[in-house]
Image 1 (cartoon, rainbow, N blue to C red):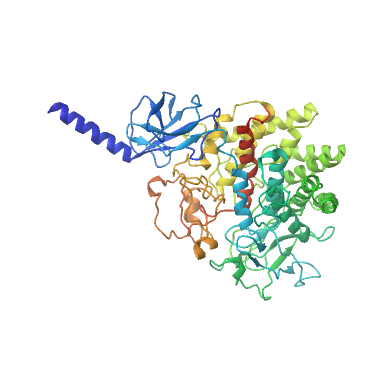
Image 2: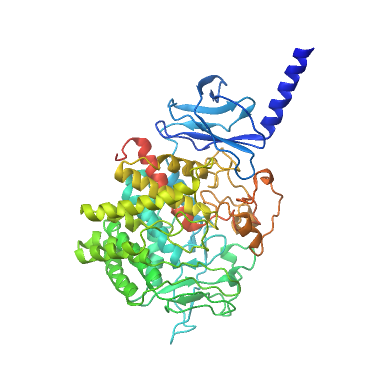
Length: 592
């Protein structure tokens, strides 16, 4: 009887632990020789000395490990543990089990990232304005009318094209130019990771141009319209009067007082806002330099496909950079009826990237010197190592100009900017080194974009220097995006195909028609304090992740939560480099 009672108590204890404990993994999978970790998070305090891998098909135990690091209380969990199985490199499908606690299945294979960078372009095509290949229809073909110009107010200008920013239909130079650059950079660094399955309009069918260049060209065409002549630039289309409820883009009913036309904001270098609120613009540099860098890299990569267009934007790149220097300061997006806008407060990073890219295109040493001098002003993108920041305060979230200068043949320049890259990564590392997910990014609005920036810089630094100091952090942040996080969900819609990923995104296409938003990177978790402060948030369908929410961070897979579950165009584009780099690494062609 005593033995029976002992077994019963043991069974009940294990059952309680298994119901209150979870093993989080990268559900997409792991490269064979990569760093591999899982995280056990529990409401209890389980005691175990080892963990095991089991074949997902047969249930057979294939490996046992003891590399377990206790990481204590975190968020909603009383105890957490990092489980290291890096030494296991056999290809296959597995799950981890500890007592009765099982992880979701995952793969170990050098092909797990194959096609992923192309996959997320599905979302970019879905966000296209003008002709939309997903809807097989056109939208916003009447854009737009000029505002804030000293002599041309309410004049019509053709700026149809580009991408919608997110669930809303606003279009910003800030995010669009960065998205263009991120995709071009991804192709420049990892051309073999991209295929050709769509034409220039985004319809199925090869056109002998890699799809990522087709997508970047779509954005560049729009940038040319938004910069129609020298020193004439526009910063955005529409404003927050767009936020008039869910509707499809080809049936947009937002009213700006001029029929179906939307306002097109002229870059003035001064504060803007034509309704209740104004931004804090101080100059033109941040926007003009973004034009310059996108045009410069585009002219280099598209010259074999569009030689005439390449020459046009090459000239525009030089003009835009000079204009950026003519009125130093930040050019923020304009709000109207609400206080929310992209609060970009830095511009030297944009000037640095523009000068560095123009130098690579021209070989002009004066441009190299200018890039170095701009880079010295902001050695570290300020959010790195910080606890918080305002919305898009330090943007772009990664400074690729630092990478170009760190790669320079001059050893003094290279050493300086390698040190800058390392210092930024160390700031993130120090904030996260003691938590189970090694995540040291601040949980501000669009935190997943910061994760994408961090892994981009970490990967570039690792490949450039062969220094693996931040390799485990890089792996952990990558895994975070694919389900090794408190909620156990991928942050990219429908990736992996059979994993747990957002199913109720904040999107008109989903809410109105149940169209799937495949490939979109959602905003990601935010501090509970931010969530409680934002206006207009309503959880519509209950909180399936209630057990995992905390003051530290909240995430909701709910279409009513625009703060954590809204996919964004620029965030998605920012992942193209890293996913293509991981595919390249898996193929064995990555530089060491």
